[in-house]
Length: 64
Image (cartoon, one colour):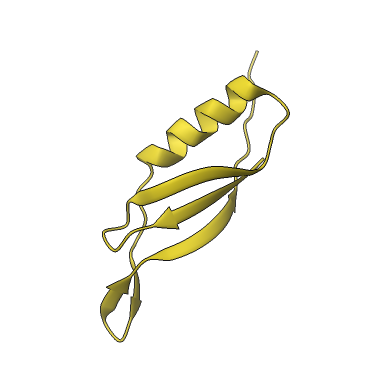
């Protein structure tokens, strides 16, 4: 699955959405919840933090 993420100047996800679904609503919701908890290194231009957008793959591995 792929998620769209807008990251704010502090490195926190400001907006998270599904770009390509896993095909399972429950997995999609868990992926969105996990990405909302993620933290990023802020993007900077000339030393000034800037918000940015990224599309990120997210892989779930199921264990027995």
